[in-house]
Image (cartoon, rainbow, N blue to C red):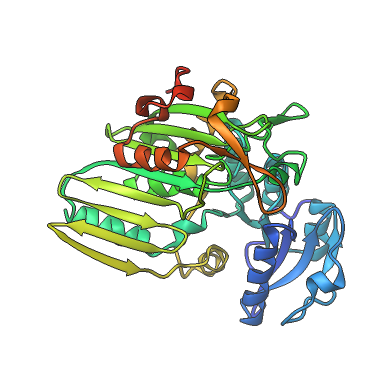
Length: 397
């Protein structure tokens, strides 16, 4: 059943009717955010799509989620509830089918990152959205930070001089149980379908997207080339310790280094390197440190919630912060990672086992400093000297 175009707006005086696909794991954050907005009268949860329905305890709390429809059939749930908005927080390989099901019904989307595991699927989603007249917001919440326009203004004003490049660093810890949480976790492909669940394309994808955004490189055509170096310490198919260097159409370099095998987890950050100073942005904290002229100034900024922004956009009162077109450059990176040779397994001498939160974890020797050095120098791992980074890098234009 198609409702093409009739889901653009709720009835007069009614909040948007929302279906949440994927309400466990990270989806719990979306469930609580929907609760917050429902209490504010901005929208109403009408359906939850999960393979196993949520229990009454999972739906309990402030506000009323009584009577919320539940089904494992997303398309049928959209039809039954006459939803006007859907939030998709499901495994990466399911994004395309769910997005197209919503689009052909004119249902607007907030879709978790990465929007798709390949460039071809990303194009299929955008074509479907255009055909259905549906709006999509991609869930890069860091791009809702008010620090982004503030940093861009500082760069435009010449506060740190000419921009020489942008570096980003992400040093996180994940134990072996992290890769057992779902069949697709840590996979590049599953049952013939692309997954591309690597450190730079999923858990630390925000580092890539935020670095691109601060450089002003957001659209696909603004990327000239992507160099990738993909490694893995864990017994997985995908990468857990990797770096990329993006060359922009303006000739600028953006280097992002990340690992899930750090000694000590740290908040990820992005550095804008200028000829007369630098700007460091810890995007999870919305914290910005500006150094120039021998002075340093720190500020913490606010943040706009992306679902709230989508609702405001549908009401005609705000521009959409993260439309699919603004993630085209990020998807060029995803495609480069997808097309690169399979990640190189690090030799046993390059890592050690340490206690994790719920299972053992693997720690790559010296990786914390190496990640920071890559962001500082804009170099790839192979250019920084570790013996395990000798395989040639992959370059995608």
